[in-house]
Amino acid sequence: MPKFVTIGYGTREGYDRTAAAVRDAAHAHDAALRKDGVLMGIAGKPVQVRNPDAAGVETENGPFMRSPLPVAGFAIIEAADLAEAMAMVSRTPCAVAHGVVEVWPLEQPLDAA
Image 1: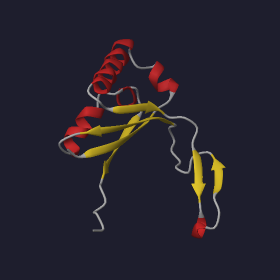
Image 2: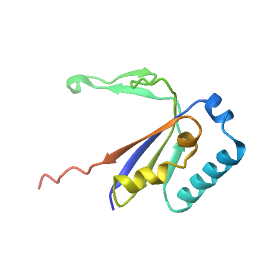
Image 3: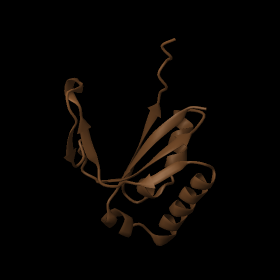
């Protein structure tokens, strides 16, 4: 089954202005997804890693991506297609609480053999 990487963005202010019943339903939806095997987590502090020309590792604290909303979390989901993946994430906290969720198809590289 195809896999998708999801990135949830949102702010505390957007979360707080969402009705408690809507938030509760979104958290219950996330709990059901986790129970069904979705790998989901809250975003921690990112670190950028570079190794130009394999000559030495360089690191820098902080995100490379920029967004008007902070990254809230990530998930790896399985769905039949992009439409099903979008439907799955449309009821998560970031989607319902004035944030946004990106859905990225996780394409598998072809074997070199």
